[in-house]
Image 1 (cartoon, rainbow, N blue to C red):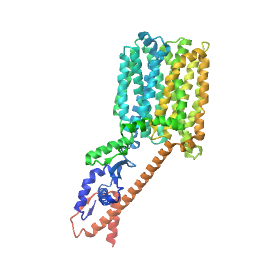
Image 2: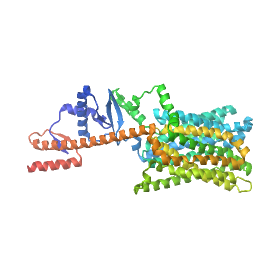
Image 3: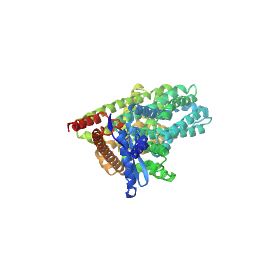
Length: 600
């Protein structure tokens, strides 16, 4: 403690008035000449508040014309990047569980198809593929809506609404009384299930700006997108002989268990968090001019449809990285869902297995997906060590992700040849089944590398980029399985798989091309350059803000020392004092000042 003689009563009132606000805000006025005097008054009041409370701000305000705009400070506790690891882990788990529900639902009817056909008297093979294909068609429609909407209105509300509707439509599938209504409900299930597929990539980018940590979480996210579909066939294969409707009831039980995680997950999209903060401050302060950056945008329906909903399509046509990534991942994804038609032909047709046992043959694909996570983490450590020792190649952006796809591409081709040329009655069933391990590794390495590269290249627009990729691959995934039976009937399993392998071989050069030309492509990318300018402006703003805080702290310390000196000189003359709190550094300054004054 130390003592100060006097403070002006008006200043004290200003401090008292602004004190509660200062615990949340720090105001930086950028007014024109007409508001100069008001700026000086506000600045003096804020300085007085700082002198009393001495807390660095968590966020700040700045003036734009006649509006006061809220923005984040560098250490803002409400900024998702600054959240605790426990909170981030909860969000990641909640997002991954939603994706797990979505992907399990995609393949859930696969083992139930014969029983559904029997109940509803369906004989067309193309019609029997539709319960899965129409669900994938929903993956085409949904991301074009959910991804951009999540960038306009936040992540939580679209995900929660979609997941509630997903639960309702899944229950309706279990209760349906006609094949036509089942197909319609499966389409709506797919549309709602596409929300986490489109949004979770952006959600993970919200909470992790560090590429290494974000990449690791994305790896687990991608593993669930692979493991989920391989669960459906064996669950439905064993349950459907009892009653095919139990398949959908099991899916509903899993979804209901996930619902609390979705409901409790906080909003992670920074612009919407600022919007909520501005709304709260307007109510608390009675100042209608306090806005968030998102409030300054044109938010009418037409602008939202034109700007937000068309962004994924514009990115496909105008961004080479997006379009080529979409092409490659679409083929890989389509072949994966074609396996749900090919595996029954191999393991039930050639080896005479039941639907449930044949469904278990998908599990090596899931095993391969988790092995790929280990490979991803190993490469992450290898890259970090290379950066630490200053390796030139490790400083290139494209080497952070794409080498994994360069490994996964050739392995994908090998797995297709392996399945095609070992699927024979003269060869034990274990041989074609083990091809699934290599397939799962390759599939996941391709997706982890390519989709992580998309998120890195289009950080703020990651949800739109992921929506574009999701939409395009879902089109392939819905259409190609329809041709599976006719292709394998004409070419046989051997050459049918070989054709897919040769096409995959041609497209596996894409990640190699990105490594060679990716930096040049990004330099000529409109979206990438816009994001680079945003990051540079934010960095400059934060550096300026930190510099201002340092200068302010220095000025406050000097003011306290001068106040102590004045108090020491006048305390004998006037004992009327006001006590203020100080920290240890202030006490050291004050003690030094008192010693110097006494010696004089």
